[in-house]
Image (cartoon, rainbow, N blue to C red; front, side):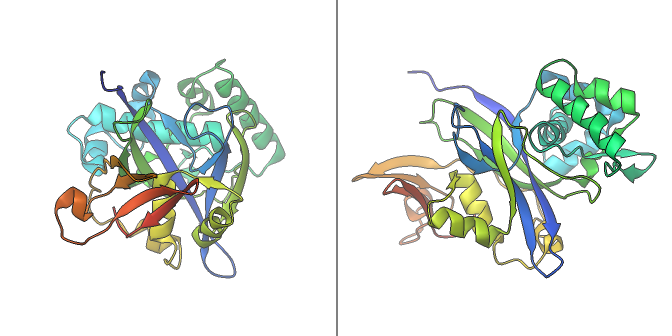
Length: 282
């Protein structure tokens, strides 16, 4: 049996500080009809499109700068992944990470909000492109505000596989994120601790990478701490799937059965219909 193809993808952690302390991350719920991670609460994101590589002249980074930021040799692909993160965040969350005249796009004026909602609806309907929107509105994509946070590759046992770069940024103050109602059917701002508590109470579903990332950042005090967490290019994580008894186990770097470290346990386990995180780091 041939191994399923691995598709490039990007997803974005939109973060904001709370006035009373702490911070929140924006999550969207995938439709229960989705062929991948149905009904799960996820960070906005999706697959790299060919057209994402055609916006270099409208980006705040050059392909060479994007390659450095993403730890990649192919600058066009690296910049395309950053653009994919911007596009998917606009499609799924309604937030467009872009600048006009040197300032982040502000959609608090009702006429501006309505016009960009029409742009978003047309983009999701396949009636326009991000390139057309950016040209019409004279925008520059703020890809320089996206930090490379994590890198996960879907295990080989899955029928759909993605090579996903997780990006992180502070949400622009002048825009209000909201799910689009078809591919994403609900959304919420939650602290990582709140999201994990909702998951533990079985009120929401989380995919393994989302579960582990939320667990890692749950103890951090604010957005600045999250954005400062990655001082180096994150190593790719390709979990190794195995079955032990009645459990499906995803072994992560540092687990003894994966790396040979005696007694070390770093994995995500499917137990009683839920993913359980055991260990830390990725």
